[in-house]
Length: 395
Image (cartoon, rainbow, N blue to C red; front, side, top):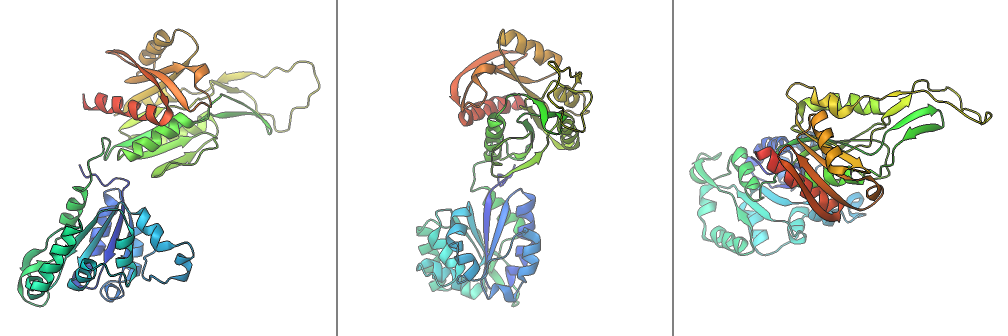
């Protein structure tokens, strides 16, 4: 399984005929789940257009070190910090020479000096240039600096010569880039998470809701993305920022949340229902604000759809994970819910200890038994929960 999901790949393209292969390389990175930023030297732009690579990557192509707009925010430093990996393909003899001696006379070589991310080179040049003693000495220097080298391959070259100097094919570069990262426990998995409360309107200014900060769902989404998953978070109204590399769909009511889940679930490997969905909604929503006049007010309620149960009915349902916030008989009530809703795992916790808190204690309940985990902050708890989910998935 490729381990490039959610990785930040900075592709540096220099001036060689093999630059045309970078269009396919960019496409493969995107397909593998990576985010791609591209830096081109001026010579590279003579072989392949920035517009082509912008269309494939979905991002503006970076060309100049002294770009007034970008440098107003120290753009080259931000790019250097953003990257999880810098891959230079093709890496020409000239570029390798610059890197060997720490030159920084353009955007790409400056980024290499400024980054703490791993740097990989995919050399491409004429076979005589490759065999030259100066090139081989420069390669030794960059390897001493910890740079990775992918290739080159041997074969027919654009000039008609045959020998070493051909850039590796894009699919081979993709694999070698992936090999630099440990495979995430959830690499390639699609995870659908619901979080936050729902709000069921009574009139234009009032609604029924549950206590929920959304912090647990957002922590799970963040940790799942770090573990390599493709995460979709369907969120009720909360005041939280979307975690990096997480796709967020905002909803308000239980019905909207169910509709969004049904739209997304067909591609999900794992469904995690964390949202505090209102059990009931008003039968009638008043079109105007209800005035405070009578001493009492009656509002007729009807049941909301049970989102988890509806998802469990789907053909080829995903691994089902639910949450239960209980005020008494935690394990007994949790086990009953596990069975009734056809869940694979249920995480049960004390409701009064959870809302708006940054810490949580939970009990994991499965058909095989239950396991209580110690109190932890919600990010640490999310990692523990995901580990249990991975173990269950592997079984």
